[in-house]
Amino acid sequence: MASLKDKLKEKIALLRLRQGDTEAFGYIYETYIEQIYRYIYFRTSDQGMAHDIAQDVFLQTWEYIVSKKPVQNLKSFLYKVAYHKVVDYYRVKERQTQLIDEMQERALQTGAPNSTDIEMHFLMKHIQSLKPEYQDIIVLKHVEGLSISEIAHIIGKDANNIRVTLHRALASLKEIYNAIQNRNKIQQKKNVVESPDQ
Image (cartoon, rainbow, N blue to C red):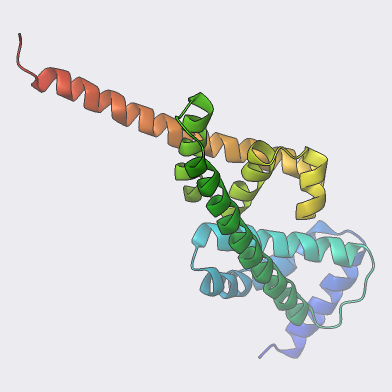
């Protein structure tokens, strides 16, 4: 249970945070990050995703408090934001599964593969190894053909955030592609070395 001194420090930090004081935000962050992260991790079972969601929780909290909106109990507020972020995570994950299923159905209904089909097959096979936020943005942009502003509206983030996230998502997908290519090259070299001279 928080001591009277801790509660007073928190109230002072909230007042300072409303003025945009980053040190006050640092105090709040350090005080609650472990608890919020732990809650999110137990709900998602994914360390990377829990870290990302926790960061979003604190960013949203910062924006809410700095906009002078009232917060009576900071700890409860943080958990409420975290709860809603986890609910959103599962909504996105479910929507992503539906999109991937639809992509697979379309791929099965088409005839002989062309280069676009091969690229789509690679995307469908390896996109699932990316985090859900990356999956969503790649599918919305490169499969559904939506604009950055449309994606921003759907996901509820600004266009610059979507551009940065899309860049990171494509970089992650490229890393997967390069790793597969390197593995294939090593296997080909290994096969050449092992094959008898003719």
